[in-house]
Length: 223
Image (cartoon, rainbow, N blue to C red; front, top):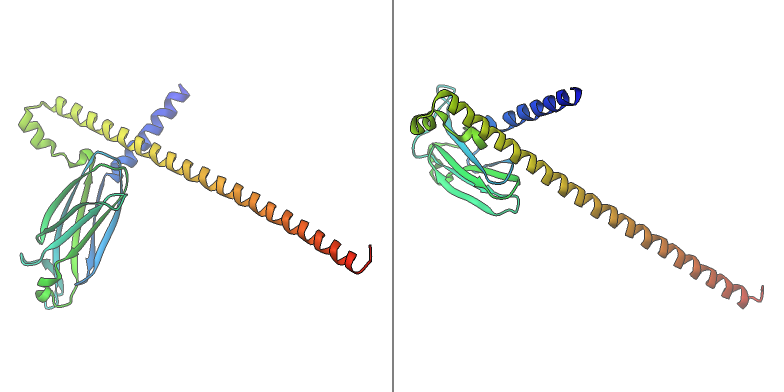
């Protein structure tokens, strides 16, 4: 009974952490030629949706207002192998989507189209960014209407997709653990060989010093 409670508690903590990490919303400021990048740790075969909107600072009203249509954002996404999987120009407000094929840290970078920044006047641009990962990218209201699902069927589908996302996250954690173990073993092996090389060098230097001292004493006829 105690083991079952511990397993249930562990599963609950993992599920809550997963739900927290799968949705992130923030805003940031960028300058005319500035580039902002974010790192997202994503399992493989996982869909990611990013929604953003931009606001320009109005010096007269001293507040941020929605940006004009002439202002755009360039979005670039790289996988853990530095391979570009998304590179596209968007408008002042939009959505970008991509699917991860390699587990690990994905780099998401955004910057403005500075060629149209005459209206920006060297001020600051505020970008609101909302990133959704995995099953949080699904619009369950549309799915229920399209497939004509009952509330119970829809809830079961949500749970199935949440469990599938948890399994992907667990596989990714195993992948990270395996890479960390390989790195540790490689480091330990290098340290071992370096210690052996140091020992051999010390032995060789000691042997050479003994030969040199012996030759010196023989030359001075002290032995």
